[in-house]
Image 1: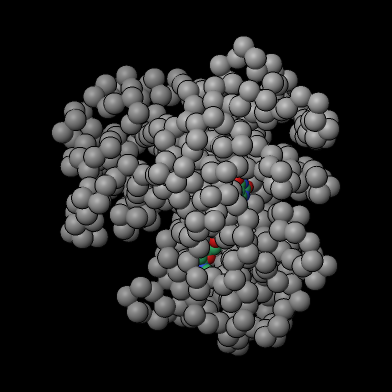
Image 2: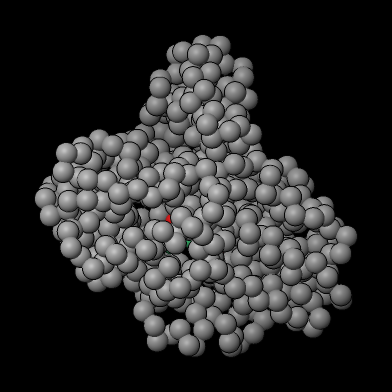
Length: 496
Ligand SMILES: Cc1cc2nc3c(=O)[nH]c(=O)nc-3n(C[C@H](O)[C@H](O)[C@H](O)COP(=O)(O)OP(=O)(O)OC[C@H]3O[C@@H](n4cnc5c(N)ncnc54)[C@H](O)[C@@H]3O)c2cc1C
């Protein structure tokens, strides 16, 4: 078989392109060397946002595209994406307040018509929102953006791509590619050590922070290059009794977010540290932990320290950086993406530099626009209105869906029901379709994870290990202890 497009990398960009291209009738193969979303796409801050802070760098094009996408994505994936309100605490008589207010006015203006509430100012004096905030913060601006379950976004794109005919290979590394006649021959090696070859008309390099190491196969020196910047997050027990997130500005000009996370936790991040090479696994250093803790303690009274950290994770931003930008600070390097179409012996090879979760759908459309000359018969744009699997309902009806599932399965606990709707949306009813009583859920692995869900993930969502299930299909890894994890691992050995 000859594929039209071979995609290297199963992060959000690779899977988004695979979905879009297969929906247009192209023959697509995607290879991911580990699990889907095992790179940067599961280590983000998990926001679908315009990027308020990018206004500081006059990145209006990116902000505009991202703000427009916010509303589109809320419609096509209301299960894994939902609105969030962000609080910016303010001290009286600070010049910075005026800049932030102007930024928010522009933000709301660029967003245009949006279903999300606009910015407002609130008095913190007699508000429950001031809990733990230092008394110097008298007022706050409150603005809107959205949350997304990042790794599920990747997986659902891959699931839909497969439904539309794509061949999705995980644990499969691309080790080489070369010209063979008028086609590319892509050589892969999977985790069993098997070597396979695939013929295709075009290659898309969506390897995220590994983008340059993949491109080394075709060129020794590249004028476009990525700057690797590590960002780390801390997870602590839930800090507040409300569902607002915080947008905090630091004395160093950076910002961090504090966000309600998986019902019982708060997520704090992120940092920005140069990461020399992807041969080094990104981890949160002590300096980064101290930085985030100090940042928090400047704002709040609860004396956070390292003992409060339950978990941490780090990802590497593959930022596009040209020579001009090398001298600038890391915060100022654009988060926008750049597409580079090369012809190697007349064969198309498209490289993606940078990008954001928020703009993945638009990026995918633009990739296919760049490839239109090679595939003139492919279909037109379609992803703007087609929900991701399980997302065929309105965000306003989410509570009704939770109620309906709870009513049908009264023996499921409330947290589990909510989790199902947030992860699987309307597919929850399909996953549970043969369940009549608690025993039909099968083995209970703890924390509401049962055999029926694990089976679904193995059969339908490319999961192959306990880490895939606990960290990228769900975030139950935060709750599982080693013993529970081993039990799941042992059970999987007989299942796979
Ligand atoms: C700390 C942090 C916070 C962020 N927060 C946000 C946010 O809140 N909102 C937002 O919109 N964006 C955010 N981003 C940006 C966003 O996460 C990234 O732009 C996006 O995830 C990049 O996706 P990708 O597909 O390009 O890369 P990746 O997700 O890294 O995927 C690339 C994949 O390619 C695979 N691969 C590499 N080489 C090979 C090979 N030879 N063969 C096969 N597979 C290979 C890797 O295993 C990897 O899975 C954040 C980024 C970071 C680091």
